Image (tube, rainbow, N blue to C red):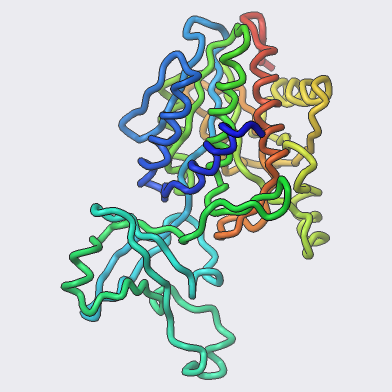
Amino acid sequence: MERESLDFFKKLVNSMSPTGFEEEARETWKKRTQKFADKISSDAHGNAMGMLNKNGSPKIMLAGHMDEVGYMVKYINKFGFLYFSPIGGLDIHLIPGKRVWIKTKKGKILGVIGRQAIHLLEPEERKKLVKLDQLFIDIGAKDRKEAEKLVSIGDPAVPAVEFEVLNKDIVVGRGFDDKAGAWVVSEVLRILSKKKLNACVHAVATVQEEIGLRGARTSAFGIAPDVGIATDVTFATDYPTEESGATKLGDIRIGKGPVISRGPNINPKVFDLLVDVAKKEKIPYQIEAAPRATGTDANAIQITRAGVATGLISIPNRYMHSPVELISLNDLENVAKLMAGFVLRLDKKTNFIL
């Protein structure tokens, strides 16, 4: 991966962008993407958009969401401890004992998620899943008055971890779901900016995917694309529970290339063209069966207005919605190459009508 592209990915991943509070990631994405776009913009919902070749045909929308799961402060008790609710789907097993960054009006502050020490729990309590109302964030405040000088009700928080290289091209971090996809659509514009295009391209870093695909709904309605490709992460099944994971989800492996979805959420002609591009460009790929709505921006794009020919290309990801999501940079690059190759195949004669 080129140094500039990698540095951008690190900065995007390390930005704080819990759902509804994506401004840090949005500004990072726009600052980089404006170098390659004919036009850069954002909307009232917070989506960030870059456009190439305004008068081209067909019109294609590329989408990757930049929001991440996190926490929100909902109550401060008299002792200065913060009680919170999840933003998006979180694994409660993984929450206790973690450091968090809280995004406040005065900047980022550190806290730790505490609970009663295991020594003080009854034997039966130790076997049970902790309840959210038994957890709290400790910011070292002596009381509510001091805490309220630092934190406000509604402030969001995320795990206090950043991008790291684990081994060669294998990297870990929080929020790869789906800042990896937001990186891809920016990277595709970088690739396409050096090419001759027939299509009009709208690359969108969408918001609020984790609570209902909201940014994709509004941006797709505004753009009204002829074809849309979403990119998100998907569940890799190549880890110790491989057999049970593979039988449920399919054989998806880190480092084996982009994952092309096939199913009712996906236009068959879009799927066939994606596979054809992968074969001819010698891009390794995997197929994922998606027998219903995918739960990604692809679902929102497909059912926009009178309907959009839609595809989904995913990045294999281990440990989703945890602070240690794991992906391959090679897979990430190949998703961008596949998406760019698809766009370059389009012209005004391209027809996705079934």
